[in-house]
Length: 262
Ligand SMILES: [Zn+2]
Image 1: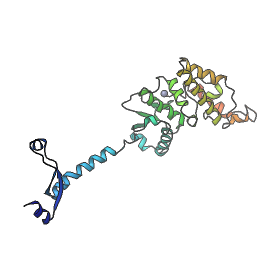
Image 2: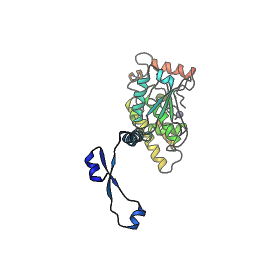
Image 3: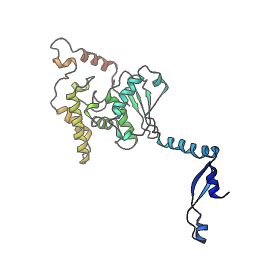
Image 4: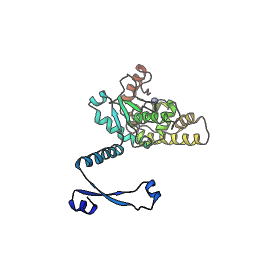
């Protein structure tokens, strides 16, 4: 069947054909068209695998992989919401799947993996402070060599990220008692810790090695006012005892390090 007749018979598809180098070397042969019968079987074999491949390449890695206890938790959606909020401040973690488990050990607020190959955080569903999560995410940055190792450094880098994440005091950096005892920090306290953390990082960039102590000193020497959120905003013992302060003192006696994070 010649080309014209084949085209007239229908069911044929025009395909482009480029001769091999050997043929072209012997004499000048331009690109020519040949016509080939298009069968349903051949079409299926050619297109389907490519479409599947394209889908696989485009699919982004899942952002989270929840452990079975986390998936069963009644707090799963709240956990996911809090994690998403904090993760928005950590663009370095884009494209990474983070394992999420529940921290079960008493007295531990959370854990963060220091294994770069297995990024994961463990959280307490009832203690989802933004700062605790920020601290655990900072451990994932330590695992990638983006932040110096150590718990106090982890606290400092987490504080320096954004004042919006500083809703609870750090657990490893030394703070003056009025700040360390607070369960929740107000905006003024958050801004104070954030600014001191930023200036400590700037000092480190200038070569200061004792930047962690510098942070602690700066916070201790800063003028502070009482927390406007808690009962202490009324002033100490003006209208009755500071209930939260009493509870915190008892808690400190019973659990010497209640804010311990890993
Ligand atoms: Zn830690």
